[in-house]
Length: 415
Image 1 (cartoon, rainbow, N blue to C red):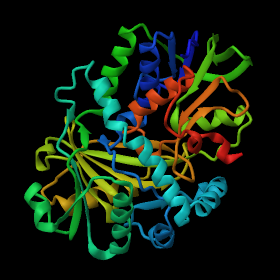
Image 2 (image 1 turned 90 degrees about the horizontal axis):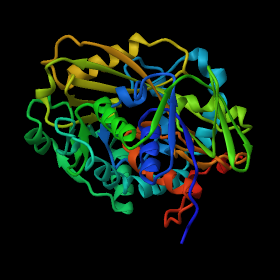
Image 3 (image 1 turned 135 degrees about the vertical axis):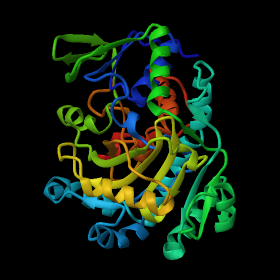
């Protein structure tokens, strides 16, 4: 039996990862303080697609996608864009990405994404028992649609999911239109994940989880974290704009903003940023009953309390470049292709996804500072993996045994 109990933990980042880590730790009776310069959940946890996607085992490190990248980059009507002023900075990441886009790497990523995705809904269900999720979570499934243009890629995805035992229903156009009759029939087929959930309000869910964290005795300090360091084997320190705080352990969970800290800790982790966009069509959430993702376009729509949220595209361009109007226009064009009845959109939002070239997150202790634990790099699946990540990280901190193989998520893979 494990008698060790951590004395205190400081968590850097108040997004879905940080809040779920804090909540799981506080439930074990470990004192936790979360730090963020903004109110909880104002970054990617606010503006994401709101999907709980346990089926999404295949990522972008795939040989079939590599061949399409040049074509995608040189059209303004495509799901991928690059801020050309960012290329010199991104080049090392791009080279590592190309290296990890073999069939073997693709399958390694799929296998270890499946390991944690498979547990993701149960982990959320445990947390949702403790909060009121009425009008916040819907369990109506998620639909993916596609044209036959990239049929080889779609066949590959179906085959890999079958191999890993991921449940999927392949539908023809008519079956999809039976589920979502208002869609324009510009697609040929699709897949239905009838067990998936979606959020009617991702930020609303996060705030409920955060309030539960506070109710159970957690603390929040709204202040910019400047520095993290391990003082000795039982003591770490968080320096904010105002003062220093001591903890036994620290969790670094600030998504795309984590690289500044890992660089300072002496680890060259190739973390970079995929910029994602959204717009809302107010009072249009009745047009579809559940999220619909158009794979050919790299975009999707989710019915939410704010209206119909259209999200998508991958833009490589770092944290400092301004919002790209071309990306917003692309999302609007895609939305109206699928739902021609859409009119004016309401808001425009840009968020930052933390992405590693092998598309696996980094979970576990820093190589050089064992009491600083990493929890970032979840790319498009940060929202889906929030609860299970919280559970895994709390287990690492409490030094509990696990039957999961956590080695593939270690930062040691980049050393």
